[in-house]
Image (cartoon, rainbow, N blue to C red; front, side):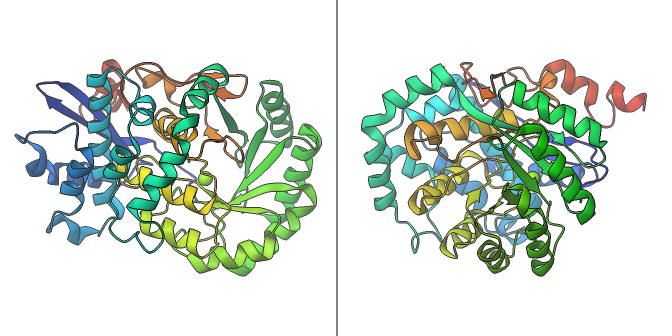
Length: 403
Ligand SMILES: [Mg+2]
């Protein structure tokens, strides 16, 4: 589905008298200018206004419920991604002002403060703010121990490096073995172009990593529901761990049907899910075993807090989507907050790692023995290096002038 990505980002710097916050949403090329325009459309709601860092939930709602901009969504597509970029920039600033990485900023908040960040509109049939507060309060006694474990061991990662379509069988086998040697306990293969080739690749990968390493497969929305079921059943003898994005991200009932038909293979989805309401429906319909939130597609940290709380309520693990431009940098904060204060466990949780574009970030992720090391630098790790921004600025930057 994504044969020719041209990784791009609409980048926001929120300049305030307290300092600067950085955020972005990423695209795979054409349409990036639409996100830039959508971000600019929010400027009248932000420029010259007071920013209360103790009420970022209110700040987010002010962007998301603007009565005119809302017409473009509501709460989906480019206008929503634009809000994500701005909201994440505000959290980056809040972390910098507090002198804390954002995972820690959130994990140090009271249950009431966390619940106040989320937008509860459309969620209360599944989870009320009062129940969410109780859920967070139950986790309070364990927070210190969880944080100590996080700092000691990091957060488990999996790698997509071996499994891109187009790699030779030899390369797949070599990279799969290398991933295990590097300490990863899960790898992922892209599938969905040719069933016979996928069965062959899956068999080779399983032989390469042995029975103890999980192999997830990712179809990037290629299939209709019956085709998804047939395809996953063909791969089932090689014990795939989850099938990711088997069909349209909007098709809640389709995911539920696939899940019933392919169990015990798990169904994972979320990187293209538009907002918390669809996540709520996926959970209510029993349509997913694994939720894959995205830091920049839904409305940033605040909406992702709602998604983490919903997932905890339904007992479904969240394994965020990463890769793209800077997603690893941002989602690590969400998974680490989840671990310390919400889900309280790494059971069934693993964070995607793609070895790609980290060199452009001021505080790039660090992976040791297949685990993300908890970032210590204040902020949301969203800030790109000034030189990378200058070089890649469209259309005037040298990378474009020389293209
Ligand atoms: Mg994917």
